[in-house]
Image 1 (cartoon, one colour):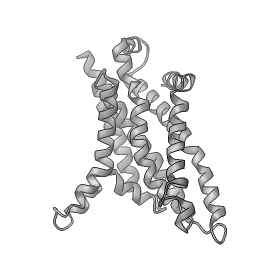
Image 2: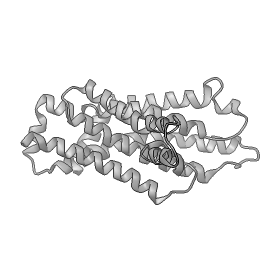
Image 3: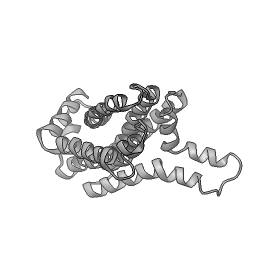
Image 4: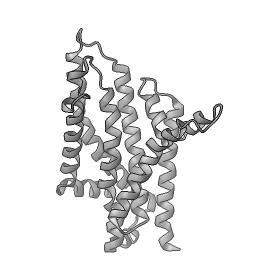
Length: 243
C-alpha cells in the first residue's frame, strides 16, 4: 500500500495536477470568504468562519472527482492496471494507497486555510471572541467529508475507462448524498419523524452536527461506514475484471 501511496503522491506533485488542485481550491475559497459581495467576512460584521465551512464542501465535491477521475480510469485505459495485478499487491493495497494519496492532497489544500482561523481570531472584538470548539469540529467534519468524497470518486473511476464519465459520476453522487438528500427531507412530503430519518441518510446533517463542536460517535460511524461501503464497491469493481 505504501508503494502505491508514494507513486500516486509523486504523480500528483511531479505534474501540475497537485499544484493546480491546491491553487484552485484556495483561490475559490479565498474569493468567496473574503471578497465576494454580501458574503465575505469583512462585511458580515461578526467574526465567524461559518460561510467558509458552508462553501468548502461544494468546491470539494467538484475538485475531488477531478483529481481522482484518472486513478483507475487511466490505468484501465492504458492497461497498467494489469501490471499492478501481477505485483505482490492486493486490491485493497491498491485502493487504500490511492485513497490516502488523494486524501493527503486534499488535506494539503485545506491546511493553508488555518490562516483564516488566526485572522478571524484577531479580527474579533474583543480579540479571541470566536467559537474555537465549533471551528475545530467543522475542520474534523470537513476532513471526514473529504474522505467520503474521495472514496466515492475512486469508485466511479473504477467502473469506467472514461475519465469524464468518472468525474461526472463522482460529482453527481457526492451532490446527491450531500445536498439532494437534505433537500428531499425538507420538501414536506414526509410525516412524523420520517423526514428526520431521511435527513440522517444524507451527509449534510452529520457534517453540520460535527460543526457544532461536539464530535458524536454516531456521526463518525456514519462517515466511516460510507467510506467502507464505497471502498467495498471499488474492491468489487476491481475484482470483477477477474471474473
